[in-house]
Each structure stands twice: as C-alpha cells, then as structure tokens.
Length: 80
Image (spheres, rainbow, N blue to C red):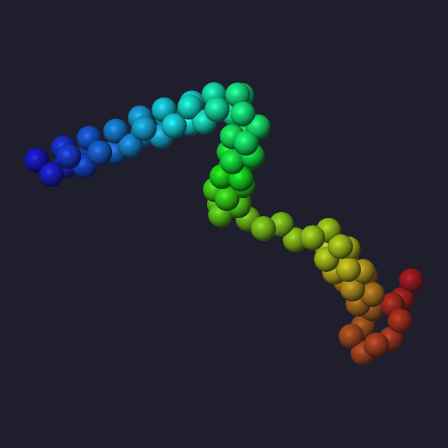
C-alpha cells in the first residue's frame, strides 16, 4: 500500500509544479514585478545546476603561459 501513496504523491507534485509554471507565466505577462521574480527564481535554479564557466581572461592568461613555456623548462628562450 505504501508504494501507491508514494506514486500518488509524485504524480500530484508533478501536476502541481506544472500548474504553478503555467500560472507564473501568466503572471509574468501581466505584471513586471512577476517577471523579475520569475527571472530571479530561474537564475537560482539554473545557477545551482549549471557549471561555472571560467572567465575568458583566465583562459587567455593560461594560453600565454603555455606559449611561453614551450621551450625547455630551464628558462632558456624557446627555439623558433
């Protein structure tokens, strides 16, 4: 009997989330404050899930360091 309650709870929560999503979109269309709230909520959710990209400047500096160390590790200038 317990699995039936669990399955029912999962289905009801999914339906509730769907109804809330549709309602939030309707609220966004009517009020700018709702749009700000939904955007903040989406940033929170996707910010927790998405990986943090490295800043472009960091990648440029790493490429320069790799370019400079193509020669020997003793500090001699790289051979052209």
